[in-house]
Image 1 (cartoon, rainbow, N blue to C red):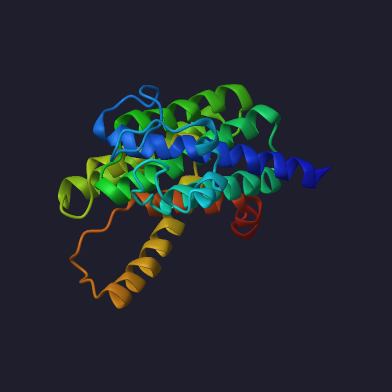
Image 2: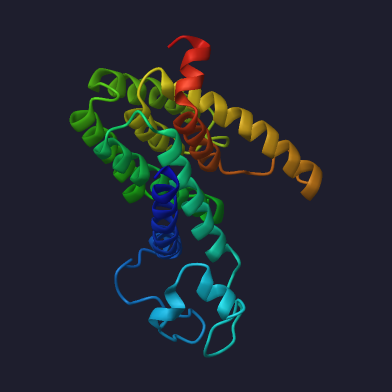
Length: 250
């Protein structure tokens, strides 16, 4: 039965990933994510139903627009596959969550994916998506009680305050978008988990930043968005929370 549910969550994740592609493309431009329908940005061709099937339509079309032949970025199916994989991972690892809690986790994961790719593209974390993270964090607290409200508030104010001081005294290294994002994450994961998430994010930043310098010959002073690392640290916490908490006796 677990396998069947995992497949269902995976397919659902693929569909949500297709929608996230729209969010990632349109939200930074201030465009509606509802209208107009999905279309080729080059020729304006509106995609037919069979051209909207996640991953499969990309393979069938051989990565090109069905009308003008413009190359479709490989990132579209990659985001669909990533979302499907993370939805399955959420289902398999968050076994202690109630059904409402699992739904909140899936929404949380979807928002992290969207914010990650938007930050990579634009060095911005749109307020509308950050507010959604904070909103589901508060609603999750009231409905599931995990974490309890005081832990959510301490997580948001504590880590948000630390990031605010860093951004205030070193604005070249951190923007206010990161401050708001980490505060929103604090509301969702609570205290002291937010500190673990930021620690994991820092480790990811050191590793990937170093790899980036070696592979792409980047210098230490070259800007790199921190939002994706915060999202990555939060996902690691989400999937391995029980193991991490057991290791550090939270």
